[in-house]
Amino acid sequence: MSGPDLVRGNVIDRLLQDRGDALVIAGLGSPVWDLASSDHRPENFYLWGGMGCAVSMGLGCALAQSKRKVWVITGDGEALMGVGSFATVALQRPSNLAVIVLDNEHYGETGMQPTATRQGTDLAAMALGAGIPTTMMVTSEADVERLADALATGPLPLVAVVKVQSSKPRPVLPPRDGVYLKNRFRQAVLGATNAMQPR
Amino acid sequence: MTDLWTVETHRLFKEHGVKTVGYVPDAGLTDLINTCEADNDIRTVVMTTEEEGIGLAAGAWLGGDKAALLMQSSGVGNTVNAIASIVSSCQFPLFMIVTMRGQYGESNPWQIPMGTAVVPVLKSLGVHVFEVETERDAAEAIENGLKMAFVSNAAVAVLIGQRLIGAKSFIADVAEEVNHVGA
Image (cartoon, rainbow over all chains, first blue to last red; front, side):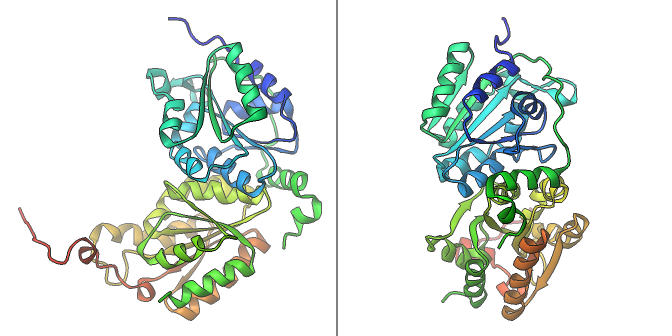
């Protein structure tokens, strides 16, 4: 059996090419490096901890910023830890939230131990079962194009699981100072006064 | 009739601009959850675990909204790493109302250990803990907690004690008469 064809950096580059003004939250691990290497902007929030919270954070942001798209880019291990959030998102049905899981079937940061998806756990099926109306399993370049279309035209919310090779992310390190990342994001979204002098 | 502390809490949520209320239910929160759900200006989010609430509230703040979280004391245990990693590292505001189990008159022994651990656990995470036992203290603590969270980027938990909400008689909720079996 051969492994996945898709390479994480290429997939991320393709999807972010059509990002527009979407806000992006990256779950901890390789997606943080992927996002920084592809499209480093103030409207990126990089999670350096809080494993399992990327989707719920995306939901909170999507409900607050209902006129902008919010993308969560995360990994299979991170998504599995917070998998109940798929049900929470399904119940809220935010029409601006997309979750993209880069599924390399391993815990990449900790020594490449296999995750449950390596043994057949299907995160897209779990999302579907949770009630997410649009779910996709992405395994080819053509599928990536379909995902890019879906991100552009909807309907959202969607959860897409992209099977990628277990290769290392490109070594681009974004800031790790959480207060800086938070304030930088809020200033970009809300403007400096509203961000720093909230009422 | 709606609890007085519920009426006051809902009024304070409005006054302080709380737009999102994330919760995992508890009997002691029933009135407050129903009141928030009936309010079209507040988005209620029922969560599968309290840990999601930390992500939800931080995400709401990133997008410019204020969120409050409601949970039972046992749920505090599910929030620990998220509070430490996300709230503390980034100094996100956090405002939680925790209805207590495992203290005054508790009839389920399994609730007592986590009920006892809530205060030291939250304090060890740097969360400011306001323990209240009366209607008046509840309203005052919630008002000051909201201010402190959202003006000073603090993490605040208001613990509503069983002296105020009552010790739950869980047997009465299941059936009027229960047959007890032993070994």
